[in-house]
Length: 215
Image (cartoon, rainbow, N blue to C red; front, side):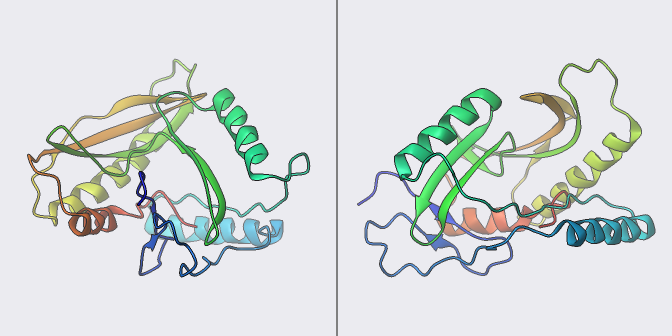
């Protein structure tokens, strides 16, 4: 068996990929974009989204694929050490930082302060994270950042309200992540027994993706 449970669900995919099994021969490869997003495609997409948001408001972050190869290292251990060194310099202790490799997915790495869902000591919790300023800035949050944050927080409140679980919504607060600070609203629910894996996954599905992300 495995000591760590690893499951991956590509955005908009119907099924989770179970990566915890020691025998990975029956795990189908996950489709990954093999080429970087052309700059002109990216700029046209941004322009299109801007036009849409001017008509209906809202908030969206556009992601761009950047593909490449490691020139200095060609073995798995060397890549892991390189990534570890990079994140140790740029990622604070409050972020979730990860790197994993699997035949079905290849290498994936990331670092985020955003907690999607957690059960710990009888409490189920999640957060809405949107709005950004430099960490050293002493400026107050402007209306643009507050409105964008509330779009995400209100969306999550509505979605969590459909779950049948009584979540308590906290107030807006700062969350420092490296060189930036974000606006954060936390949602918590008392729950003595953890949800089953199926119910936990269903709850995550309910709130993701938030209005802050468009791939």
